[in-house]
Length: 465
Image 1 (spheres, rainbow, N blue to C red):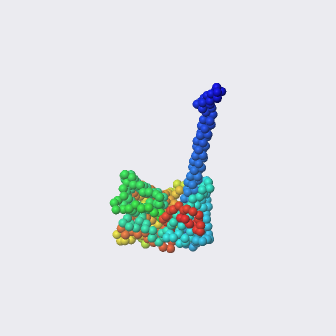
Image 2: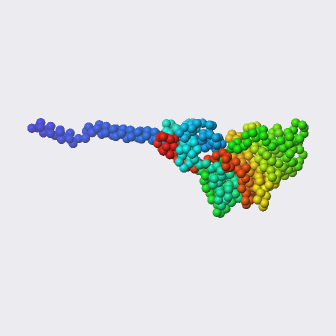
Image 3: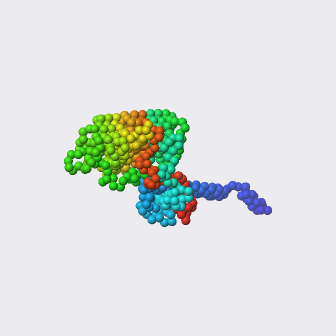
């Protein structure tokens, strides 16, 4: 009996005792800790994988955008080829699309395709589809374009009139500059430091117009967003301009070897072998109160320099176009001023008589370069100027109390220090000086719509866009 009580007592003590619990408790705690640590590791791995994929995705979309921009640049530069060919460089299209073009940017790859004009783009005239790939991730975008050739681009036509100051990059108007025409560019527009615009303003797609506290736009005018590409000078410059031009009119007649028609243009100063024209450097220059009057035709030069109260005049009844060769062909380095008009010099037209509704103007066409910076500059009280300047790959500077009548187009434009840009009532750009919008000229395509595509590019490159 006593044995039974002893066993019972021991069992009761075992039931009530906590001895032996430490081991399972430690095991359970360790298992829980391992589970939490494992969850943290898995979460960290997932975050890293997600961050890596997000980075690849951003690289892919950036590459796709870069490809689209390269395609837009090629279209703008070589659009004249599309007059006689369905694709750039004479490539053969397939299924309404030109062959893909590939490239690399920032470690990612892109491939873009351009549609034939009027094929496969719905309401638009042309499409660009660009695919970017980064780290195995692909993203695809489409840019739709419309053709704006023939002046039907809506380019500032309205209460503000046609655009008189046109850019491909940024336009700055500051330090009491007064622009009395509509302004349009594919870049940004910045009006500040008492700069003023009395006209409509168009900035590029995705760009902006910034009018600071001290800048103004006259009441009743609008700010819009649109891209209107400017084709290169080479797309309308005469193909034989290097050998068939009016430069002979500027030669100093000194020997029997001079070309027929030398000194046909009139010059009030003393003719020299290099003034008013240097055939070796192809430079037109006048200084010290001299006046050079051009009698007509197409000139092909490298540089124009006017200074110290000198004047360049287009004769009444004449049609004058001065084409400027590339800085590469002229042997120039970056930063060269291919047009430099200063110290009260100016360019005027005898045939520009607004009160008689005569608006004949000389045209200055600067070819420029994508790799060598070129500048055209009017400065230091260069008086009233009357001309058309078309320099889509050059920087244009207008400053220091100068007055400009006509149309000015450049890559980037800086108007400052009391410069005035204006057009008289009734002025319209003459057709022969309207190469970037004249009917029958090279097509000009403006970007209208941008969208990211989804799914597979089947059956067409823009499927799912």
